Amino acid sequence: MSKLLDLMRKLGSDAALAAEYDKDPEAVMRRAGLSDAERRAMVEKDYTAIKELTGLTDGQFATNHSIKCYEK
Image (cartoon, rainbow, N blue to C red; front, side, top):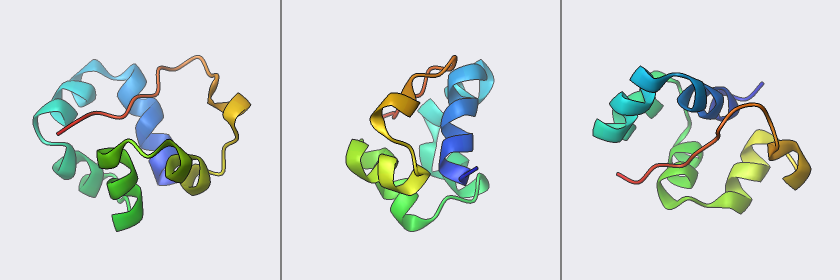
């Protein structure tokens, strides 16, 4: 599983992590080991890049988790 997808799933299921992400998304993304491209995709809410970086297709985004991109 990609680190980006793992982080997105954790953000959807871990309220404390999501709150921390709201305060300092860069720190959370760096701690999760995201690449520059992955961090940029999240910050810019670039759905196409997120799909490419995670290897998911549109239908695969339907999960039991809320997957969000947060603004800084």
